[in-house]
Image (cartoon, rainbow, N blue to C red; front, side):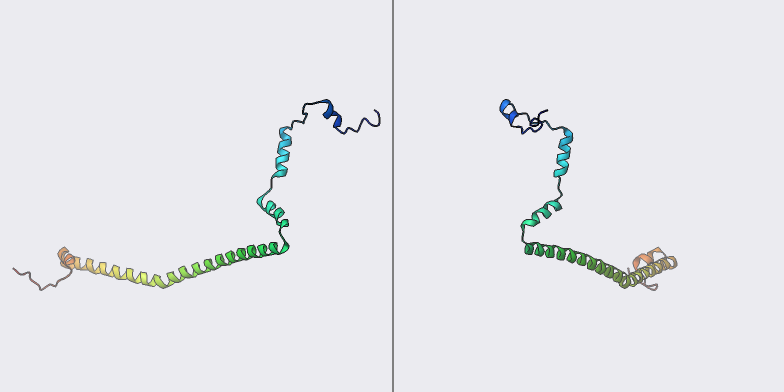
Length: 136
């Protein structure tokens, strides 16, 4: 080999051949190129952030982090408020519900006792009294 032959600038192939001789890429080459080009949204935004001044980036960061902390605080508050509301409701209204149920059970027991003592007609009529006689 001569000293000038191992360095090819590629210019000779363009002048002697009029056909385009671009190399054909295989599927392996395509997959490698696609993997290198895939970016996440966060990576793209981070790359775009360099075109904004530092003050805009700081304000954006402060707004985003303040919003995040506000949402977290609101969520924590809503959890505590929900727990307090429902536990207080159970403690306040459970005795009332039990008392109403007890009163209904007593009423049912009185009605059954009256039906046993006086017969089925007295329980349905609502207890007019024993001494009343129907008028003709």
